[in-house]
Image (cartoon, rainbow, N blue to C red; front, side, top):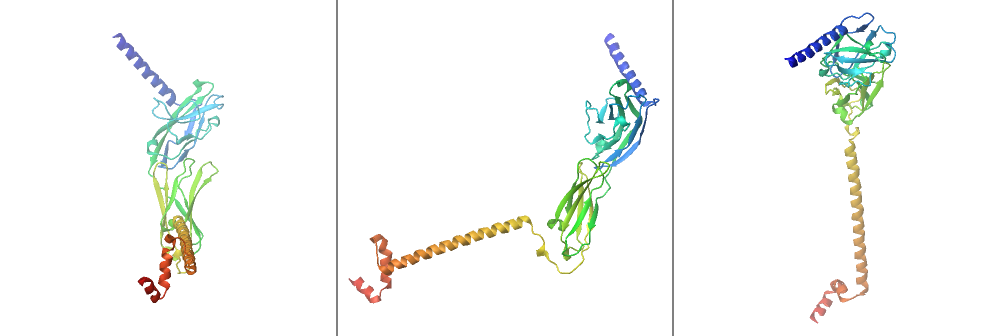
Length: 332
């Protein structure tokens, strides 16, 4: 009975402590206030910055202060973003981009995922006096991750004229500071065009990502479809299409298009092999011809060597004699 009573005592004490903590963090305390949106929607794969400002009653609160964003419920505390080095965070795509020393608790979420859906609150910590730490749970921020609906934007640099180089640019949706998305092109034009990806830094520290496709169109490319596809780190994709309106002469020039590098390499190697074979063939032919010529000169002088070396020459000599001579030798 004593053991059971002791257990019940500690359970009751824990419940009372939790209720007191909840009462302290949820009620409005004079001198403590926060300004932040209560609900934020972000498209999957994109990012969102949540502006946040807070006030605290202590005069020392803005000196070497720490700040953290946590996910509900309060117990156990789950840190998702912080500037306190001793804290362990569980979400790499959450960042405290505001400076708590300036009363700034701005939160940035990059590459939003469905698992990021939830309720979050900010906690301020005084590095000199932990009793001045305060969790702002009124209001809390509800983060909703919705389906990706934004499309990449395709822009055209100049007119599309047959036989003249042209460039298409594709800008990814969202202005983020996280991992760059993968931007690819699809269509017949992509097969013989050159692509390049760019990162442009904005004044607010975010990034704009876009890719270019440079190619030479021909009249047969008129009304062909080119697609720009953007894939984010969460494996969600979005795409846009453009139909080419090629103007100019009706003369097509498919052979003028840049050929595939592998085809060019194969042709070069093939030509080199053919050239080597031709050189070897010519060398063998000339060598054989010289040997025959030398053999003919020996037959003309009848300068025979040993018996085994002059057998063929005697036979060739006899073949060159008159029939009567050959008959007489045979009769003998």
